[in-house]
Amino acid sequence: MTWEDYKENVKAEDEMAKKEIEEAEERAYIVSALIKKRNELGISQRELARMCDMPQSSVARIESYKTSPNLDTLLKLFQHLNLNLTVTPAPTNR
Image (tube, rainbow, N blue to C red):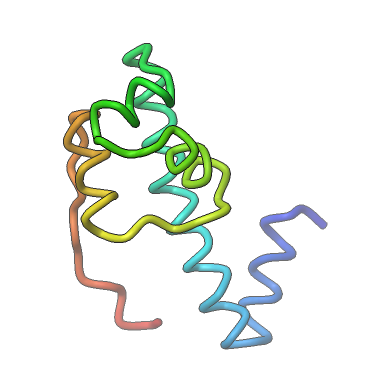
């Protein structure tokens, strides 16, 4: 059984676990996009933090999933990385 198979099995069996897994996947997608773009631009965590007027440790905690940024912080980071945050309706089967 693969990890994807396992996740799908858990999601099918437990509605609360399904919600938690999907939320974690959404957070991971956002943070991964942030890290990927920062690296593509050749910007260090320290440089990004300076651009956003925040401590480098805050960027590190966000990138290591130790904390979730509030919306203002996320938008500030995305602005300096030339990323957009798009909101779309959730599927009705959630």
